[in-house]
Figure 1 (tube, rainbow, N blue to C red):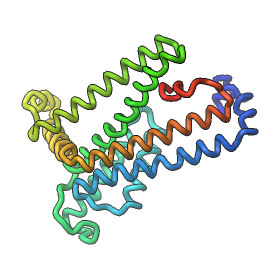
Figure 2: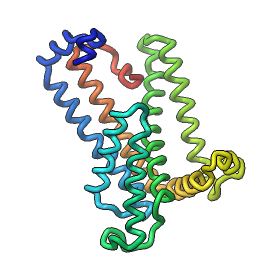
Figure 3: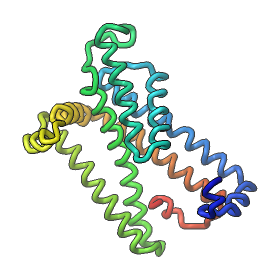
Figure 4: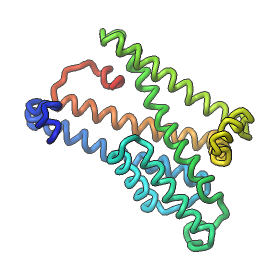
Length: 247
């Protein structure tokens, strides 16, 4: 309401879109499904680390994290919150407070939770970068602004190369490379980085898990993409379909 009052968002197109509420309703329904996909992905990673927390509890941590990501500046505050919450929960399990949740021995604390959160983030980025790169390449045939396509293509291509390089390094090296370990030691983060690298190595070696996580991420990003298309239909934007991939 404040942005509309300031004139940063035009009210008239939104008002006209109310007559095409079916598109907006479909878009909101698609967006409502994305947290469930994210829950499925993170729960899969936690269980691969032998952290068997109740799904309802994991979902509550995820939604609290999403709230903090929206309410606080930056986009990592929620990850810190959910990492802290699950680390505290699993530390309680290791002390014998709740054996009903996890009957088998498992790595506890940040050493198990941190890799799941970082890998969850990276797995979520990979399909996004692929879709953006697809849009940047496909936009050439639709006469979209060349500078925009060049920027989107370069950024998504570089990001895709960086993520795949990290995956490849974690796959090939069971131990943290000395160069990276020394660099992290200067910041007094060598223990955290070692745990992160060790957990990532276990993840990428699990081919079934990687396929599942990337498939869920593609589904989640696809739902968001479809929601943008539906919102565009409600607003009658009339832009090429490939534009939504870049957006």
